[in-house]
Image 1 (spheres, rainbow, N blue to C red):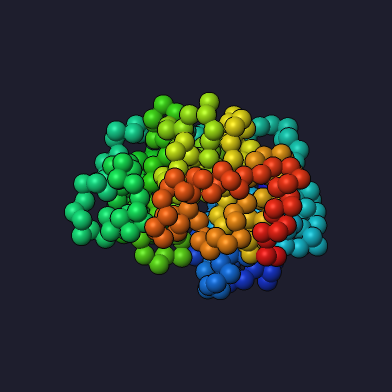
Image 2: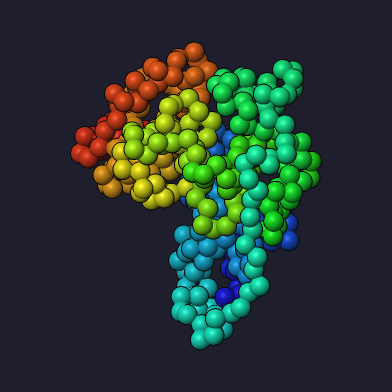
Length: 335
């Protein structure tokens, strides 16, 4: 497989991509063709193609979809993908067959430092007038989480200091709220940088390897109890025994037996509707929000003044599975 082949067919399929533009040597940006990106702001483009070793991969920072460029091209145009496959076979680059001689890579596994070595000011330590602290206060994040959230005025510099052996294409002097991800033992295994301005890239998730599952809250959750699974880390801070998927796949949570999946309250979002359908088919419990609830997510409900105990009650009363969940979903969806 050659990166030049990936680039060639990405460009050939680019006519099917809205707002397609090259942002760097091996970085392209466009509106996500999977979820359609923002339905309110047509200027938003949160789909990215980037280089990893000798190939290109796709990632959407809105719906979390990730795939190879080959599968992206296949989604966009079956005809172009057929040409792609023929060229791969012609050049003897068939990615689906094992090479006779396994290529040798000199690869040093990236590693994160321990939890207590995050050398950034936490939100609790910032003065009340600091705009990062104001952001957290305005979101009504519980005080006990203020010491677990951090601020950096240069996210790229911080990433380069904390991640060894990995190169990320990031903007200079990009100030962000840093949301760390820990494993069950409290070791730092990843981090999410949340933009504090109107950046096109609202969230940037940094991980140490492809084995890292983007699950927030592993260091706090008790899997022997009922677990709430929400989409975003901040939403998870308002429910007890709650974790966030943060772009991970539900299959990564197979080790949690007693759980309910709580997606955002977006009945017109095709991607969320599809995810709910998939979870119902897999016999998982899901929350289907009541139709009279007008808020998009848990944080919006909190900001409106509704207490977390009431939110838990709403979720519990609207948790379904099986045929009943399908009926409720069909009543809730607007597409």
